[in-house]
Length: 393
Ligand SMILES: *Cc1c(COP(=O)(O)O)cnc(C)c1O
Image 1 (cartoon, protein in one colour):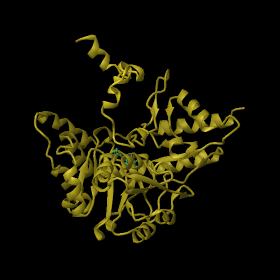
Image 2 (cartoon, helix red, strand yellow):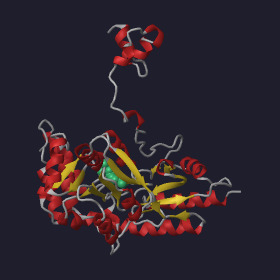
Image 3 (cartoon, protein in one colour):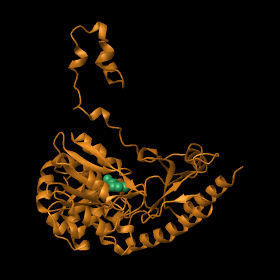
Image 4 (cartoon, helix red, strand yellow):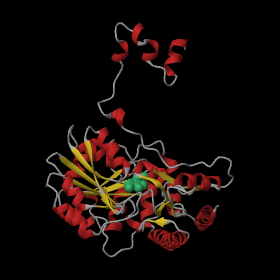
């Protein structure tokens, strides 16, 4: 390899380094490939922290992963898949679609699987947005919606929330003739709040027929409220509603990247043309199918979460912290801005004890941290650490 090509491989050294403005009369720098307008304005998604330097035992409570792991049946299916890795996956992921359809009582023809629901959110943007089209997102909404909208050449339009909750009136007021997609997470991340099905219906009723309502129900399995619905009935009854779901949260398969959407046939047909032909891998298809069929394991995960969500919320409130009421597997904890008890100081304190929470400034909450409900040891550990933190002189 020549020294010339070695230099090209080093990050940060490209044509501009070889041809600084003065020494570049032929403007070669401008002839390098340029991303589409808007791409370089995207702030790349920053995943939850994983490390606490110098701490022996770390509890990662920053990405809403389950403390219970995956179903043993899913792990077994994953291991079995290791013996067929030379073969391409089933491009239609039939085994997974059939399992999802059986458990949820759906027609498999209305299901499309993705490499995580993140992929599906991106595919929806790339399928439906033309340059100049608008996608409505909400004030504290999941950042992937904005990123994917911009990446597809669309324009994200932000609707205010009210009391850290999706505000249907604000969304409807933001609708224009360019609105092509409306994204809401229900329940929402990072707030943990939800809107009742009546509100979702009112939102849908106010949208133009040509706008797609995307209901991201990544945390639906955790919700135990009579007035909540993930969106199955709305999708079934309309041509412009899509529900997305994930295996990354309650099913404990975040590392395998499995999501799915339930959508009208026209939408499935269109997105199917845009996706990669083998977007789910063989172990993911097998493990996902086994996981969703193990509803006893799922029920135990719900019970664990309900008990600890209540315990954590009450204990943190009792020591003077404000916790946004959550129906999910995480809580948004608000810290005082001053007096040595800021979110940033709490984050450093907790990290030094091995508890990694999620800073949420990027979501409009500079004074809060998001905590995933973890194991008993992790939850009690955070409660003890924050009790000490709040009592510090
Ligand atoms: C975690 C999460 C997802 C899931 O993403 P995957 O790509 O399926 O892992 C989707 N939406 C929201 C709001 C989330 O918090």
